[in-house]
Image (cartoon, rainbow, N blue to C red):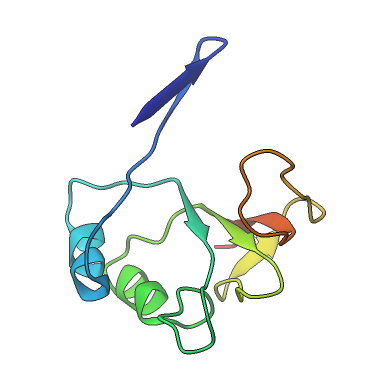
Length: 107
């Protein structure tokens, strides 16, 4: 899906797949994501934050994005990423009341 505004655009890739297939898809050369949106759901997982399987697969394939946008309080940022903004609450379109933070990869 592509969203355009004021001459700038953003492409969104939304996966509707079983978890392990997503990891394989993201490792394919056709994807070059700049930012990932992470939010863990429930106590038993699957979990996408921290040193998760998603993080490990992307790190090992050299496909870590430059940024992650994570829900604070239930999602652990990936290792090697530092926040670039104070926590914020998205008033419109946000399902849960988690504060969100953008993190940048530190090389």
